[in-house]
Picture 1: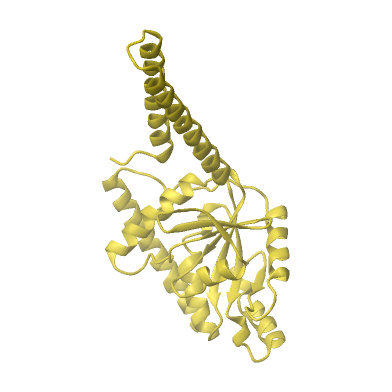
Picture 2 (picture 1 turned 135 degrees about the vertical axis):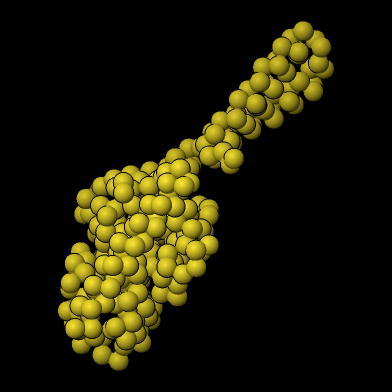
Length: 270
């Protein structure tokens, strides 16, 4: 069983303390050469300080308010993360956390929960761990969709949003690759109208050919104004259960989502 990283830190700190104490005792009793004892003590103290620093760093990263970039494969999550000039501060299990001035953004794996069972199970486990670890520090989800035909954009949004609705978090939409629009004013107005039934807090548009400062300001405003909520993982596929119970819950939720998807498809095609 893989131990949580904080327990690994604690184990190393305790081990280093034991070595330090034993070294002091042996040095005092002249069992150990003073020079060797001093070197071992310096090394042990250095390890302890370094591990404490890593623990503090991880605590700080875990507690800082985050905007999570989330969406299907190919919608431009990493592209947007890089466009905003984020500097990586942490990376694990496919998630990259970075900062850009006042912003803290998370680049995530593709939110593919509808392909083959193996991929779905892997993604659920990845996001389950991430959501649990950052349950109190996610300010909002930024759902990304790349600019293309409106019906295709709706499908990608639906595949993502239906799994996030129950999480009690604020949802925003980022339309990427908007530099491909031939008439941005007209397309922006049209898309806002087309996506109004999703009830996003705000819809933002990412044009990589423009300076990123305007988008940054809007995202900072989101962080500062979005109510801080704890993610509600109860009765979602991201809640932690025993393996058999989790598989049953996932299947039940997937069936419910598929039923909702069928209804929404009918509405879209009406």
